[in-house]
Length: 436
Image (cartoon, rainbow, N blue to C red; front, side, top):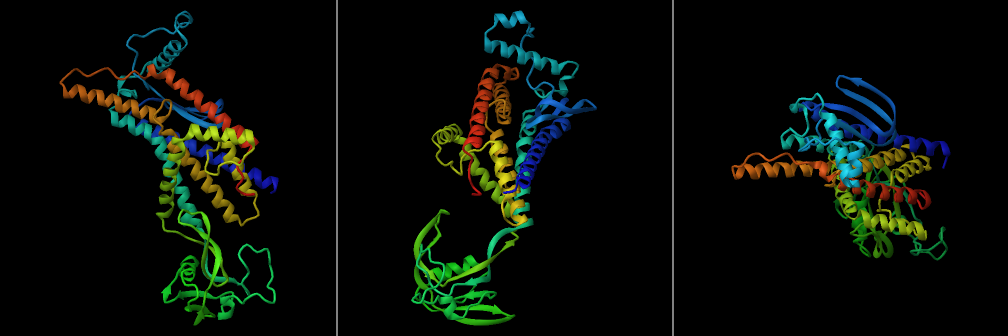
């Protein structure tokens, strides 16, 4: 691999990640402003601020590390029942977690200074709060669908076409290291029937075929039986009689794995080309992969533990296991540096960005603070309390004081940092190997 191509791949992934984070925050920002919430800050990245500028009530900026982002909305939490000054003395008297709650309430009170209640997040109807919090993850899902649509429908999927690339002159035993035909090797059925490179398969055994996969399925199901294969050669259709041999070959199993089976074999390979898929194929693939990501996230602690174990023992990584941003960046660099057509490399990097956006979509829906899913759960709980009060004709209850959950948020953040650190270390010490 060339170093320059590797660096270009990593840079493209980082830029794509930063753009994905920026659009995620736009997904929060736009509905917040539409609903009249005062947004004090819109920041892409974490750490020191590289650039910022205020437009109207909002400060827009870019920070050093493209590993996250946030918008600061007025009144993310309702005012505390009693405003408690988070002085050094009061924090000293309070316990560690109680002090954290105090600080969170103090920070929340600062966002309420000079802001009318109608311009606060907590005062919005429940459905509007949910729309704001889901805006970010939904933006990642839409971006993933767009990227997969570009890959599937814009670039196309590399598919074996019905055009013949090569014809084996003889039949070699399965698993043989032999590369040339010997005197006693049987002639391949394709060569015996007169099939030539460049022929285009029109139909097999009376069935029209549009892909080589369809032709192969009929051939594999027809061992020791003469079938008609119609090919187009020099714009003229010819019917050739082919008798597939019963041979042991590796084929794709029902679950996508490769299995060895006794099937019909004729000895020919097809040319591959980019075949544009229907417009819905990319979004459908994104939704399907999102379901797989949900399964990974549901087992995230166990999978991170397994990744740590593989790192310590030096065992190969699970290709379906979790990766850090470092691991995804490394894959993007390796994809850019592989000796493959440029479209292959572009499609791979776009696919990685699409998968990264799906991970952001699913991860942010986890129903724990500080993630978007945690805020959605709080809004739903608040709405349920209000609905219950209306049902029993009781006064409206106080808004849910989510600052009480700051200790839980702290534990979640620590868990995220620890798991992220393990994955980053594993991606450096024991990286996932896909491109050899």
